[in-house]
Amino acid sequence: MPLPKVEIDGEPPYVCATTYPNGPTGIATEGRVSIDDLWFHPRAKVSVKIKDASQPIGIAGHYQQLVFEFAGNIEHLSHVWAQDLLADEAIDIKQDVRIDGSTMVIDGALIQRIGTSASNPGDTSAPGLVIQLEGDSLPYADATFTPHVTPVKQSATPNKQIAKQSDGYFGTAEISRSPYGYRVEASGPSQFVLKELPRGVTNGKILVAWKMKSGNGSATKNGLIVLSSDEDAKAAVCAGSWIGANEITLFENDSSWGNDLKKPIKQDRELDCRLEVDLDQRTASFTVNGETLQMPFSESLTSIHYVGFGVHRSQTLFSEPVIKY
Image (cartoon, rainbow, N blue to C red; front, side, top):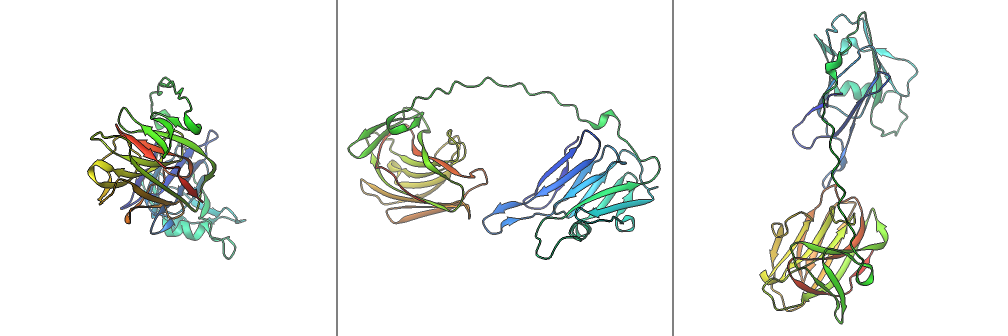
C-alpha cells in the first residue's frame, strides 16, 4: 500500500499502516522518547489511502486528525460505525466525521473518546477502535493502488573475520597488554577495539572510570572509551580527549571523528576520566580532571553490551576500565 502521509510541527510519531491480504486496513501510531518528556505521544495529521472501503479499518494510537482517502466518492454512505476494541456494540459516528468526495476526516479527540470508551478505570492504554462503513457500491481501488517498487539488490556480505586480540578484545585497532594496562594503536582514522560485557545493560546507569595518556611522541594524540549496543559500534557513545589539542570530547559514534561536542581542558600528562550513561534519561556525562561535558543521545543506543577503546591515527595507553552498574 502507499505510505501514510504524516504532518506535524515538531517530532512526529512513529506511524504503521498495512493493508492485510484479506482486505482490512490497520493504522497505528507509537510514541517517542525525549529527555524532557520521557515517553510522549505526538499528535499528527495522518493521511492513509484505503484500498477497499467495504472492509474494516483498525485504528490504534493518538492523532490530531486521521484522514482516509478512498478510491471513489463516499458521500452516499448510510452509516459510519465505530467500536472500541473492548466494547460489545458499535455506534454511528457519521454526523461526527467530515466527508468530502472521496475523503473522510476523523478528529483525534473523537478517536480518543471512542477508542477508550470501554476501558477500565486507571487503564492508560492508547485508544483502539474499529471503523466499518455501510452503504451501496463502496469504492475499491484498482491495481494502481499498489506502488511499483524496484527490488533492492542484496549487497555482498563483507568479510568480517576480525581476530580476537588481547583479553578478548576485537576490532580494527591493535591492542596489547602494557604495564599501564593496555596499549591501543591505530594506523588509520577512527579505529576501535571492543569486548563484550559479562552482563548487558538495558536500563538504569552504567559508570566507567579509567585513566589514559599518550603512548608515543607523535603530533596526533587522542583516546576514547567506547560504549556500544552492537559489535560494530554503529550505536555507541564515545568519550575521551583530543590530547594534542587539549580538548575533551563526547559524542555518538559517526563516520568522522573530530567534529563533535568539545571543551578545552588544562591537562597534565595523565587524564583521569569518568563516564556516566543513563539509559532511562538518555543522557551521558563525561568528566576529565574536573571538567565535565554532558549531552543527550538518540534512540539508536538502546542498550550497552560492549566496552572498548577508540584511537585515531595514534597510540594511546589506557588503564583497565572500572565498570559499575
